Amino acid sequence: MKRDKTLLLHGWGGSDWPHWQSWLAAELAKDYGTVSFPLIQHPHYPHLNRWKREVRAHLRDFRPTTVICHSLANTLWFHLCNDAESEPIETVEKLILVAPPSLTCQIETIKSFFPVEAPENLHAECATLVVSTDDPYMTLEEAWRLQERLKIPMKVIERAGHINADSGYGPWPWMLEYLKSGAICPKEGEAQ
Image 1 (cartoon, rainbow, N blue to C red):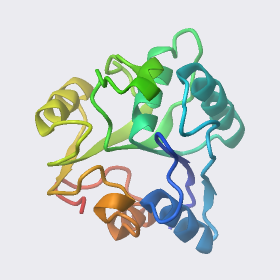
Image 2 (cartoon, rainbow, N blue to C red):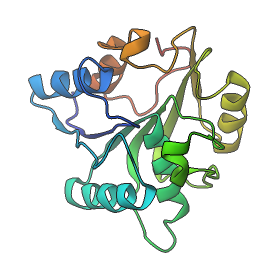
Image 3 (tube, rainbow, N blue to C red):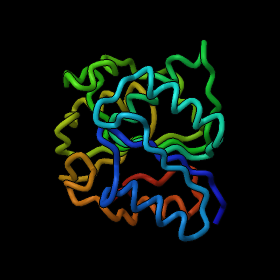
């Protein structure tokens, strides 16, 4: 197994146990994997500028080969990419975007993140979008439009909600096996 440096970026409210990101961080560490799973400041009351500053510092210091975003972290990544001309970020080998919210989300607590444009450059050698058929924060139609704009493969999981602990995604063997496989991009239809 290739030793990636994996950075896990949580969404609004964090991804503490039993969320799959917590589980994944522990599983990667058990096998002496190099993983960073920072709690971004004020996860329940996030602000875009604070989150951008903090994550830019993590990217500079940790220098990940793989970045895995969940929920609001996808929106954050889009902003970092859109700002990269003035504030560059290094390209990562693998980027996995899991359950992004709508690009025009209207939730008051996270309003500083929206609206956001899908970036022209995701700053990744390979990127994959993973969505659910019944995510309350992004319709499947919106997901297909996003996939078309990003021009990356998309994995659709049936009835997985927001792909979080509330929808049964504590342990997520597919994600762990994908990372352990050393593959850059998963094959079509693999996400479960």
